[in-house]
Amino acid sequence: MEMVGRVGFWGAIALAMMWLVPAALAQAPAEPQAEGCPRLVSQGPARIMPAVVNADELALTFVGHATFLLETPAGLTVATDYNDYVKPSLIPNVVTMNRAHSTHYTNRPDPGIRTVLRGWNPEGGPASHDVTIGDMRIRNIVTNIRDWQGGTDIAGNSIFVFEASQICVAHLGHLHHELTDEHIKQIGRVDVALVPVDGSYTLSTPQMFKVVQQIAPQLVIPMHYFSQSTLSRFLDLAREQYPVEFSQTPTVVLSRPMLPIRTKVLVLPGR
Image 1 (cartoon, rainbow, N blue to C red):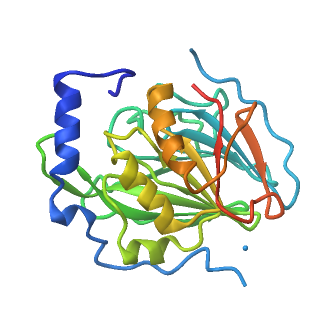
Image 2 (image 1 turned 90 degrees about the vertical axis):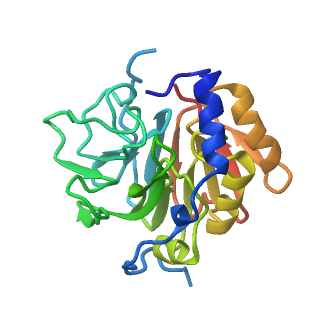
């Protein structure tokens, strides 16, 4: 399990592994998926209150760490990186998971959850999801992750893309490498990117910033950081090109008209 402020031996190991990633790590999956979101011709459980979501809106709440709650106009609730430690107080209809660490998945999802989408395939090979549930389409793009022995776990992580109300939200998961052209094609248009900015367990700060530039979202929301200084390192780099805004609330109601014309970083408070 990841812990805030972890330093010493294991921190050094994580940093060393980051720079010794095998060339195979960033290889795209062998079978490309159909393009989605095509380019436009545009301490304790957090208390989550249901948002008021109009027909052309999508509510996004930062629960904490890598977990967000999405709410659609039809009342669908979806939690990302659902786990045993950081989760919304309500039971979501749908959850997505990754398995890089225990704070990104659980083997014991609440039985009240109707749909569980894992970013890896327990039976081997890549996970493959492209489903429409209620008024949201959810699909994944597989990536690779480092294993604890310094090797590569092929297709061990997924970027999940959520499409509702003409908004495309990409959750980058526990991303361990920069993206290939094939990844970019599969991801498609990204309006909102949920980006891990820890600077070590996933990618270095400059590498993750390059990923942001690769996918070119209109809104960047940082996640997966362990201190204010870690977040600040990413924001200092981002300010060289993008405006940075801090929200007073963990919920933002997304719509096409509210998206900025040029990329902006929005920091949401959370656990």
